[in-house]
Length: 411
Image (cartoon, rainbow, N blue to C red; front, top):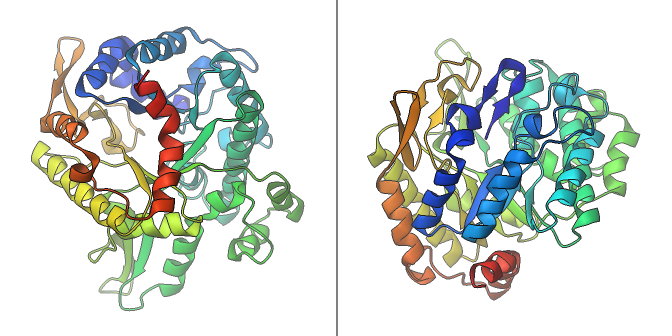
């Protein structure tokens, strides 16, 4: 559901989900999947300030109710509406996201699970530090402003939803990463980036105080004290921490033959089990979802990667890490992610549970071995699939955040 309307990119359009949404949801249901992450195209449902068009969303969410599928609604997945000048850099971006979140919650008061913003850290840094996505900016000052604005959007969206639905459960899915230093190369930068990965989570939860190492980073780069104090005055509760983990999530920094800086996938990695432990323990044992993962290329590679993550999850849960769910992204292959959606070539990127291929003007879905593997895992007792949680307190916290979905499944 990624979208960049400023350049005409919209994955729900390119994968033809707008066209085949009903059959896509039925396919998921037939596998036995009863909970999905589902993106709402902000740029389409909110085409002008305070104006909303819910026609397509009404249909999709209604069918999910009929199929007993519980959505974790993803309100903002990179794409800001065209009327928000500057996108995430707009001075009142957070307020605008709050307006939209409240309107959505009022329209769909039965929705329990929310992701107000997908990958807020990536959204901010790719858009305003590395100039990869709109608004195509670079530098520390732009990055700091974007991080503050996006974190404020998360906060205001959470607060707005809970005005309507006080018991709403919030999951923020963000990059799950770490920077290793090879032989001490660029060690200071590796340490900084490994600390900054938590900055958005710390901001919206009111954990980024004056003695936090990122306070100085933000104020040095133009964020005023009063702007940071706002988060301390308006902390929001996170219920589930979503970790997006890929093979490339762990980086290594090393020196090249001429002393140049090289940033690449780490050769010696902590692995998913350890990364999940790090993130959960930082936030007082919060339940963890593997909120996003995939691997491109042959289906055999996807299956191998998924089975590896299942094994890692079993190991983590045996050690008391409260992993509550695993998400494969996406149900269908992607289109144009080979250019990070920066060029519209309509290239199919094989990585999904269902593969895509063209038949005339139709993108046909064909199940891969991942579909069979999902069906098999869902049918297994928990002890045989990902293993029981050994820590009773962790197990209780996981049961609590899954209870609304479990109750719906059994009604």
